[in-house]
Image (cartoon, rainbow, N blue to C red):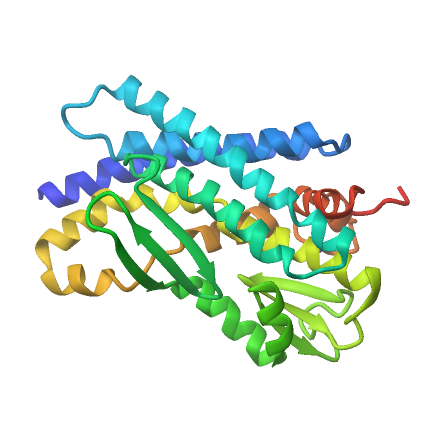
Length: 309
Ligand SMILES: [Zn+2]
């Protein structure tokens, strides 16, 4: 009964917060006609601030005051979001220098910022846990107590990787250079108008796109999509009260959950990209108006998704 009531309260609470979050995203969509750096900077820092603040409030300890907890989560989240944004921007180096090695650097900076947002959302010290993702594995380092390294499996990211693997062949050399899973195919079967696609923390590139400025420009663009899949990970911690209760009830769940990481951020990106931003169809020109496509193109090569407009 207590658990049922907790779930009920949590669901009502969660719905209210989700509405607020959707309003924020939609307000950015309506402002998409003027593409500029400040707009993307605000979007990224606010994702950190809002997910950090809401998460901190959900995970508030009994002796903490709600307004102080919310403010701390929001401010720390803003900081994390700003660092994550600067990591996204570093992908421009991939295009400028024609060097995939910069993907490791951009991911390191992005992941540091994203880790701070997650710590804010789980109401922990901002420096207490760090992660760096390789494909569907999350390399997590805990430093709040004795230093502990845990590789954790991300089921949703894995689903996206399987989807690309069945549509292409693994490109080991490019994967090693960029630190990001890359697959190859003659065409993108599920979206034949695209030359590359990001369906998880990894890419599917057509075989003919493998050198020259177009390859590096596109790779930088797709890297930003990979980070867009990750940026809502503060939401994962909204579920802590539920999973903690479950852990108390089931020692088996407690043990196995250590090796698994619920990556709801993956589904959040799909909702954002395909429902809020209306996907990539040529008609009714949803690709050109898609905020996430504009961000990926602007931060990598400083132009909008459809520059001829
Ligand atoms: Zn794109």
